[in-house]
Image 1: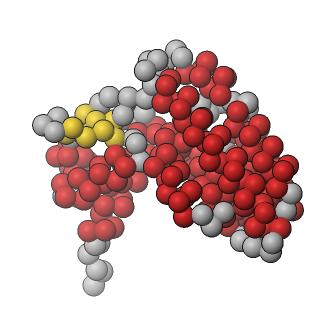
Image 2: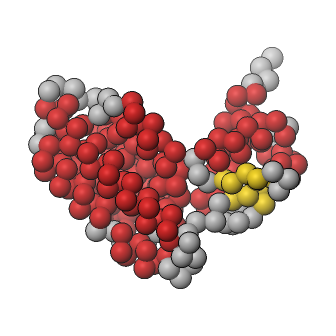
Length: 222
């Protein structure tokens, strides 16, 4: 007899499904996320749906308000600009620190494994897979620092980063991202911290203005 899925499994499935719907635009920005409708669509009770919405609120994808319930966050240009500020503050330092640890002999294989997945997704033209792998790439560099406070500082913004990658995907963009990530990966493993820091800064900062310009037609200022 097949065991019934656990509540945790239901929550994970609901969370993944709702997140994918937000990223793809199936649940538009500002739209209501009604527990009853979601539970019927996903085939689970309202309890795991409610827990999934709590998790997604912690990622910054969902906003919950008393008496109004949950809605998909309405992104603004200010949100995007502030995310770039945060990434430049945390990820550039992380690239340097991760590279220093590699130079000291701490060379975990996960970053290369994620890079391999990103390259495969890019070859397939899999927009969802590309965004997921790119987000995981940046998160793994943070993890490689071994700094728990740094990881905790970036964790709440990973959902927004993933969402932004989906919103700003272009035909040439994924291939350029992949090339730049490949070089950052190579430099980190080669143990050259100053170069890793410079590449990480350029990789993030050079996209700020083009991204803000592209989104200015679809997102409100603030």
